[in-house]
Length: 170
Length: 419
Image (cartoon, each protein chain N blue to C red):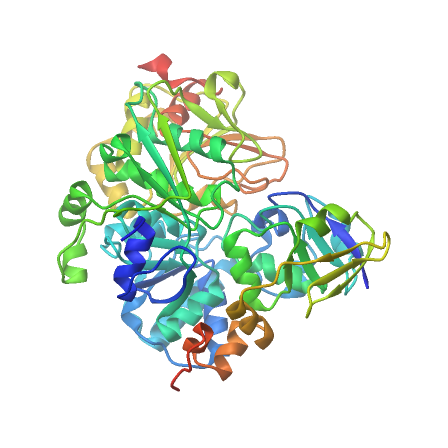
């Protein structure tokens, strides 16, 4: 269970973590400045297990992974958004940041609501209102990466070909 | 058979692929720069496998080069050491990565190039599939030579007509960004075509592919034609590098998700206003707005022809005393040509600061950082809050001609007044 932090549409990578802080890749360091311009109180008050709830095209802009690392550094449980920008989506999957796509939940969760998320089923429960939402399932090969904890972990134990459902030759 | 992106991926995989297919593709080149390579090296070490093919790895130092601070210097050091350790053949320090990729002949029709930079879409202007990815995937490609893609649906944008004097490809692209919005082509391939595009030289086609990123596109493709082949053959070592003939690639019986047809004939100069790239207005709506810094640079608009337009408007004049004007050529080759032809002298005589090639002021870390309350007009491709320094600064995007005349007056100015 965690508290919801809500953000609007088109939240870009500079808003998630401004470029001037990207001189480090340390998650805690980056997390200290996450969303510092759009929601200055976020970084100070976010607690492990909280949830980021955002609108469309979350993470648009730069290819920098600092945006994903900064969010991971805040120890939020997951991001729930109406949709994701494509590079951010890939980066989140590759780095093992849980992301759910669910416009209905975004519409039905307000700042500060208590939210419970079951990442294995994609079920989102807004405890403050009693409403439940079902997030879109991730494509199967994306699940394989996510289940391994990210692409690096996946590659340590699998051949890349296995992503495509083929048995890879080591 | 199919759209341009389907054609490219079908050739690459040796079978017919369609939008929606998930494919594993052999990549031709894997590009990264000083901002993104250190993280890729970190991921590479964690994966713990050897590099698949050194010839495919192309590294650049452009985002903060020469190093403006110790941390940047440390990042560069990491890259120099890695290049030595792995004996990598390609490390460039001669300008903006995307421009150098083209100049050095890495970008050819039908090639698949991934880059740890969101503007890797740029390569689409020469009929290559180019897309931006994060550093971890770059490391994955280093060790596997491959990358997965979902073949995207395509939005075809047909442009026809001729722009009026004083209106440029940048104005057309800004207009498209306003029309489609920053989420307008997310996950899609955007195919730019029609008689207007066909008649454009490469340096202007690049603007469309480059800025397709700003509307969320996975790639921004332009069919490779005679103009492309001629450019690559005459201006770059592409033929020596690929060691095979360069082929024109066109869509064949494509099925488009969306088809837009736009006449550019009546378009006026456009400006993308603070704080979003899709907050696009005809210039006359913001004309007269005070500007503190004009920046002519970046992977969008700092090619020789752009500098030539700026120089033609500044020649024999002085920029307004209230405005700082920074000119950053995209590459050393452009810088040198501009110097040989007297453009640099024109800029200096007009009161501009000419910096070394690179990303420069675009990333807000050196060479033109903005103070709170300042307003910049630039030839960049994005105007995110805080991008050029203070989050209390404002960024406006426009063509090189608009930038030049704005430099003269210190206020947003219509270049058509100077024709």
